[in-house]
Image 1: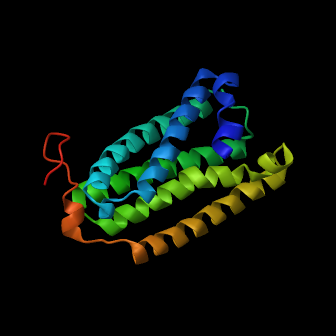
Image 2: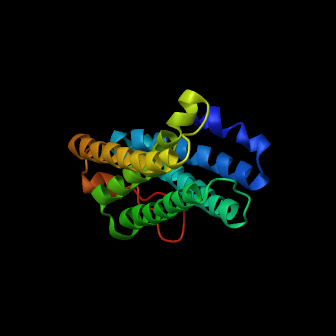
Amino acid sequence: MFLFQLGAPRIFTDSPTMGFHIVMAIAFVLLCAWNLFHTPDQGERFRALHVRVGWLAILTGFASVFSGFAYVLTGESTLPIDAQAFMMSIGTIQAVLQSLGLWYVRGRRWIKLHMAMMTYLFYTSGVLIAINWIPKMTTGRPLQGSWQTVWMFVSMLIGLVVANIAVKYNRKHMDFDSDKWARMALSEGGLTLRA
């Protein structure tokens, strides 16, 4: 709901930088949601899709981060300075979590840490932004004055709590058989799957 109620209309009413950012952010969130619910332990078909969708999510995620930074740093943003700092912080967290998640699965084969980083990524960089906009979605306007700043930090805590619950749930219910997950590793120098 958030993506289309508040995000999509801005593609056409804000700057081209923000329009690009929103398109990349929407794609990123949808790709991440797909991968959270379609993991390699669900079979060969999902294993192959998980890898490809994951790469698309990484690309759209970094495009979203860098276009968001450009929007703030070029002075296009009209958000209050504390909101700009908050959004830049979320972008930085997103870039770090994406990098760690990719390194954990590709560089180290630490599947549980990869899953945790990607879950935190989705909830802090996707769901957290939606939580932050709840006042505007419900009342038609953001909170006034310092209440918006307070809500931003409260929403961050809510996002982290939800992410922790999701990580614990996934650890309990997912099959982390390393042989099964190792098959999704990319072969050296190419984008083909190893059997």
